[in-house]
Length: 185
Image (cartoon, rainbow, N blue to C red):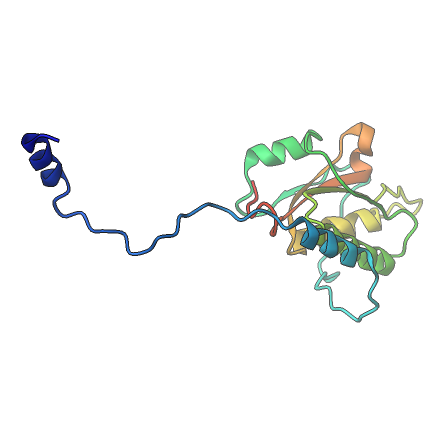
């Protein structure tokens, strides 16, 4: 370097402080596939423990057999909910609640959503049926599912399915992800 270059270089470095550590930020750590496989295996094993699921039947929102269901939690992007409603987000699990009592349906739904969450599944389908009743009352399981999904801490939003996946007799449910991606759209 010439003297002029050296003096210009020193002038540019005026006030610069040396870095105090020698470690580079390499970004997000890679997922531990062995650990994830163990977690998935553990999630498939039943544990018979008493649990309080927090899903209330106190204020059930009555819905009609042909009513389309739709709900988005706070902060969920409109674009993601639009895709969900159009069936453009693939579902990786499905649950059929046909013919179950309300209590059995609640327990089954809670366990299903817990397992889906452990497996980091993004979207599932829940078939609740339409249960057009002869006594003229609203469908019970559909109304309860509509209420329960709004209360579940892992549910970001839900929408009635497109016709080929069950129409107004089923819903796509978008779930939070925590371990692998670390973010939700």
